[in-house]
Length: 120
Image (cartoon, rainbow, N blue to C red; front, side, top):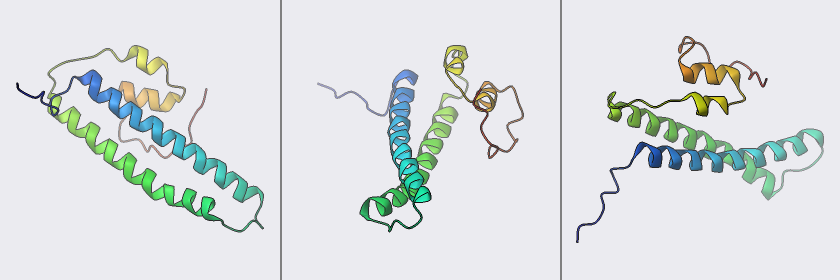
């Protein structure tokens, strides 16, 4: 009996897995934000193991986001225009207008993405 080829996946499965990875990063980033907020509000508090661990998460988050970006770029190249999907519903869930516009292709992709987020 032939084993299924795990290197071949539907776009749905591949993007769902990326979304799950991003959700995990979101949780870690939230913990980091909470820790930094406590550190900022209490400048006399000494760094404990939890605080140091949270700061080490910055490197992990950066590496993970870079890896996921590379993975998505490779997926994009591998599709080679073989299909199109409707992104309207997915874009409608985004609360960051500028990001939604970039993902839709409605603005210059060379525009800096370091601007502050517009939340509404």
